Each structure stands twice: as C-alpha cells, then as structure tokens.
Length: 288
Image (cartoon, rainbow, N blue to C red; front, side):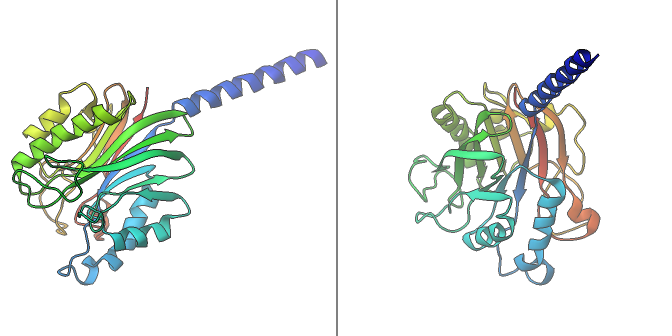
C-alpha cells in the first residue's frame, strides 16, 4: 500500500508540474494603449495632470496592464508616473525633439515579468534615423520607440513598436504605416511583432489598411475571439457625453497570436473621472 501511495503522490506531482509548465508557456499578455494627454496650459482644475494622475494610476492598477504603450507623455509626466509605478513597472523611451527630450511615446512594462533586451527609436519621416525630423504634411515631429522583450514567464521573445501618428497629415499617416512595417522587418530578427499607437485615423483609412494587410501583424479589435467591449472610440475629448465614433487608438498583434479579448476601458466615462481625454484600450494576447 505504501508503494502505491508513493506512486500516486509522485504522479500527482508530475501532473501538477506539467500543468504549471503549460500555464506558464501560454500565459497571455495584457497589452494596453493609453494616450495620457500631455500637460497643457489650457487644462486646469480637474483636467490638469496632477488631478488626473491618480486616475491614470487607478486605471493601470485596476486593469493590471502588463505592457502599456503610452502617448503624449513628456519628461515631467514620465518621471512623475514612474515614481509611483516603480515597484512594479519600468519605463523606456525618449522625447521626439532633436535633443531627444519633450513629448514622446514611452513604454511601461512589468519589470518582474519582462526583460528589456534592446530598444531604440526612429522618427516618422523620410529620414527616420535623424532625431527631430519630419516630412510630407506632418505638423509635428513624430517618434516611434522600438523594443525587444523577453517574457520571463513564457520564455518567449517579441518585438514591439509604440508610436503616435500626426493628427493633421493624411499623407504622413500613410507613410508612417509603411515605415512601421519597414522598420519591423529590418529590426525584428524574425520575432513576433506588436504595434501600438494613437494613429489619429479611423479604421476605414489607408494607414489601417496598410497595417492590416501584411505578413507581420493583424488588428486585435477585428481578430478578438470575443466581441470587443466598451466604447469603440477611446477618444472622448474630456466630454463624458460625447457620442461614440470610430477608433483612433490601435493594438496590432502577430498574425498567429490569439486575441482572447479586446476592451476600451471607459471607466473615465462611467465614473465621470478624467484620467485623460482618451480611454485606454486593452488586448489580451497569447503568443503561439
């Protein structure tokens, strides 16, 4: 009987270990895109960043984002946010100006889960390796931050770009979509590719067609296994009663990844609390 008990216990341990290994290998990543609204002199009272910051932190905590592609974050905001987030998150990125300071598109990530292996930046212009450059009809310099991460839970590596397209130039937005794909092909080293960004364009436009029709990525919204939840448009312009419209913020994921869910986290509107003039969007993604 004792021998049989040992066999049963040993078998249970093996099964448990196998289950844990499978769970680790298939643990999804909670990818968020979050335009956090840069500090503006016109934003006073509850629209000012110090008043909004606790709600940004609450959205991050409540929804347990693993990786956050942020937009409109300047040096002051980045330092302030990471001061509160540093127990769990680290941040990578730089500003879009020629001196690499100012507003940018930093990436916040859970440092216990992800190891940053490489990172860099490029500009959405005809000379992407020239800091502060802009081209076509772009009204401002636009930067992209690229990274290579190791997921220490699943042991998988992936390539990831976070960016912010111009809000005025349709030509520059289409060209920017092409640049994202070209840079990913140049830098990804065969790894699965993710893009996040406030792309300042609706889903029926040329930039989204370019990013949806290629060998690298697919749109997480249209490929979610479950119906997307929340508003369609993350942008609500500090107007809790603003009618819903089309998307402007996006999460693109590897072609063979599984998107179990997609949500626009419209807690700002539900709770009538400003965290930004955009709601974050969240895709729960499992790499093959």
